[in-house]
Image: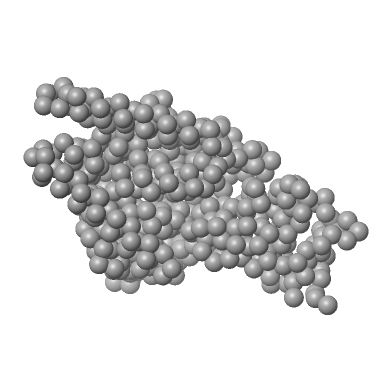
Length: 372
Length: 104
């Protein structure tokens, strides 16, 4: 019997670290259920219900404004790229276009997936479908995947969106900067879904009644890509692909820069978002592109609050939260060494310190046990 | 005849809000709309076992606090993934300032 270290509590180990099974159909998935980590009750900070009712109010205004700015910037940068195509100057507008297409789509996908960005449901759904395509995340599977991510955040064997299983795959993280790992993987899933099938993990979280939508959408995607590739062949230029398809790769770096701060290096298998999420202060441009997801602890604890109120929620909950990171630099000063250390010692993780005003952490069950 | 049971005083629920009501081993969500209509449904989200009373009512829709699953408070209709199964609803009336529901 191996008893794993859990939340810093070292019990005895009769063998060296046993590599954990991050798949949703493996041993750790079963263990998570047995140990009460699946569908568990999570810690939530106290906040007056009256105040929360104010913060969850949905408005169309901020998201319509931000979506309009987003599309206008896409059109301007795309037009500039077209006019400068053939010269090196085209790199600049396409860098901007790529980030707007391949990175800003991530946060639009996310917020509209929660249906909190707009007050009007169809607006959330339309932007969700467009952003899903841009960020190469199939809308139906990823809605269910993200639902599970919120149920079982960074619970090994349960959460399909753990960004860096231990020991970390440093090459994979480097490739993620241009979606060179996740992009081809997602496209291969699109092809699988075209044939009317899901993979084993997807079968655990996508309900039967949603599966036909998965297959239909995958076929639509393939048709769109086929048209763009045909346009590139007929025109003898990659220019059409610079607008649709390639920006999901060359423009992904800003999404990765922001996204890696969310959970990497922090605790696994805890039932308290203060211990496995980061809130990082970011500049105005990043917060526009990222739709305030830098307030990540707050978002996970209260996913009903729309992005434009997360700053206010952060102010309300400060008393009960770890000190936020002052910026990218402080966050990455912690993340990069943690990743390198986890390569050598996969049991290592960063323990978040709670302020004296905070309620105690809620680590959940004491140990996760697995047979040898 | 039904099996009417007393829940609370009508004013115990704020306008456009929800409270939890447990009876025996069952749990219910009791709603009051902005126009002072009262409704009742099963208390747990049909997607996962989360108490809907932890959520909020907006435009006669209750939103689950965990995954934003949404239901019509009057009909129990699920309004889209991840809420795919309708909520069971129960008759409600206000008698002498008391909210009562028929749980039969």
